[in-house]
Length: 117
Image (tube, rainbow, N blue to C red; front, side):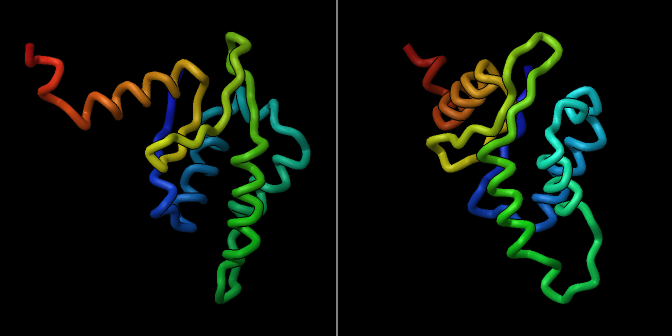
C-alpha cells in the first residue's frame, strides 16, 4: 500500500511531469499494465518541447484524463488509482492508502486531541 499526496490547487507543469516521471521510473511493474492510450498520454506529458507555452493546455488536458481514468492493479491485485480528497488534495494509491491518508490528514489537524481525555 502506498499513497502520494498532491495539493491540486498548486499543481504546476513541473508537478505533473514529476509525478508522471515517478510513475514511469519507479513502478515498472505497474507501467506494464498501462493501456496504449495511457502510454501515449504519459509520453506526451514527459516529452520535451521547445514551444514557448510548453504545450501546457494539452498536457493539463491529458493529465486530467489520466487522473480520472488511470487504474492499475498492484502485485496483490488491488486496484490503484487517483482519489480526490475532501481536503482538495489528490492521492494515488489503493483504497486502504486513501483511508490512511484521510486519517493522517484528520489527525494532523488536531495533533493534541488524541492525548486529551
